[in-house]
Image (cartoon, rainbow, N blue to C red):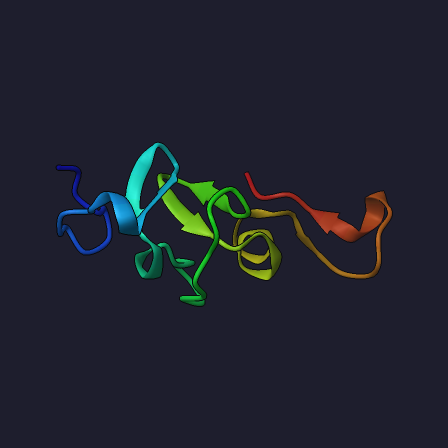
Length: 78
């Protein structure tokens, strides 16, 4: 029986959600930052952890900057 990566309890077929190559309980598949419950396939991943696409993943791992676009408004992290 597979174990949920979040709570480490067994995941039964009726409650299983598969995402990031693992089986999760539906309420355990949450954004690491804002804790919003995610649906399988509609989120981003960083180092094996799920994040909602907007705003959390973009804010944490996207380009930083100011303004509303254009090459001059972004600062890229190294």
